[in-house]
Image 1 (cartoon, helix red, strand yellow):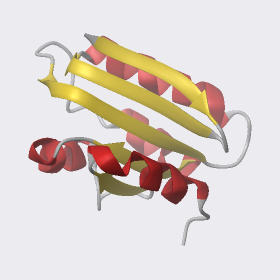
Image 2 (cartoon, one colour):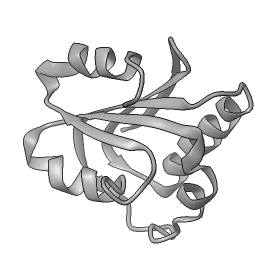
Image 3 (cartoon, helix red, strand yellow):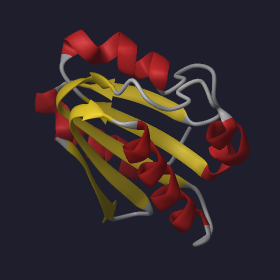
Length: 122
């Protein structure tokens, strides 16, 4: 299990997470995002949590440095996952506590998530 990172249209990074998210995987996601920040403008993020079962035990999961240093470069974050992981994922992503807007979508709403990401932020 692990992650797959892709560049999506409209300055968007796509992240597919399956199984357990390791801290090393999180760092890879953050490094990919940083590369996109240099292109100018805000970057959006689409997170597809498929069969997501939680976070690894190793790593400094309380380190918010990336968010504090880069949040102004992130426009929107859409997370697509099962309802049972909704609260955990929104808390992990800092929904309501960061500049970037974070929205949750159910697995059958992936198209809606992509549309939402393509629309200008309000």
